[in-house]
Image (cartoon, rainbow, N blue to C red; front, side, top):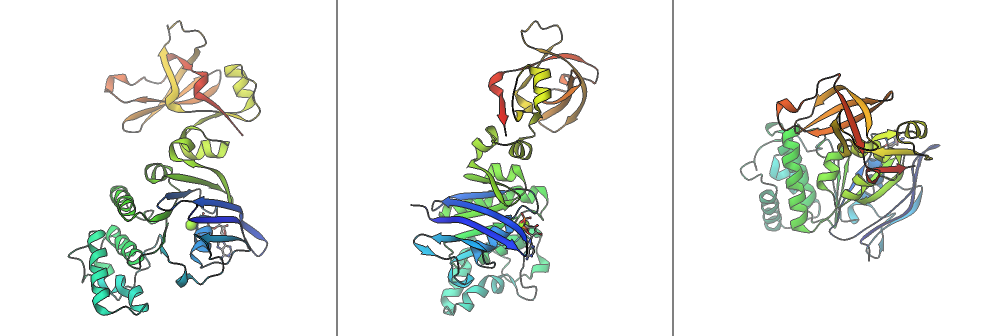
Length: 334
Ligand SMILES: Nc1ncnc2c1ncn2[C@@H]1O[C@H](COP(=O)(O)OP(=O)(O)O)[C@@H](O)[C@H]1O
Ligand SMILES: [Mg+2]
């Protein structure tokens, strides 16, 4: 049986509908990501799950309990925000202990639980530091510890890594996932970063304008986008409209043809390969392990990725080539 179920959730602010018919069912221990651009309703859905916002209609259940109208304190849900929301005048220990004090636990229990969670998020030695004495990554770990210490049934993380720099973000990503696995904690993580979603999630819900655009396991959503929006958002896909698909590939389609940059093969201009397209390299971008080329064929520009093995692999602008695209690597999307 599903652990957390959201059924037909709607949210309207005045006459602006920001969440439309949102449905979701997740298992205990799953790590779910809401992925979508800014303003698509991710935070609003999270706030309705946490109880900080009342749905216009729809139901939220955890196990057998309908929690749709329960107060936030009674839901057993922990939440971490993008901004740390720590108390500036309290040290690490007191920030983490706050929720336990509110629950009137004994001081011995509070000390024990706080010490455990400080160890879990690797903040030992920082107990007496104040927020302003900590780095962004450390502050976010305090916020995580504060959410974990009350032993929530569900953890909600609203873009907790967005304000951090790239290296710290990657470390903390792994740390969050590791802690989540160890605790078997049902988690919903919100991000607008597709790489973050792909590396962390069991399942991804791609959101667009208050709706779930596509839902599925990370590798499925990436390799099998259902819509033009998901293809654009997830994988730097080339998207050919019906006219271009006909012109370039001789295909008759309704929507768009999505082709991943890494699935297009670049052949020598002299290659005698049936169906290969004559093309010209226009420019390139170095993306570290790959080189992304803009390649033109019949006035249509395609992005093509190649592994960056040696500097002599680089094909300068103006190089004539042939492109081979296998039909299996094309995907028609709505
Ligand atoms: N309290 C509110 N009152 C009115 N509009 C709101 C309120 N909160 C959010 N919105 C609007 O709802 C939409 C979705 O916002 P949000 O859930 O914050 O998106 P995201 O987290 O995906 O960036 C936005 O258009 C936003 O302006
Ligand atoms: Mg948000």
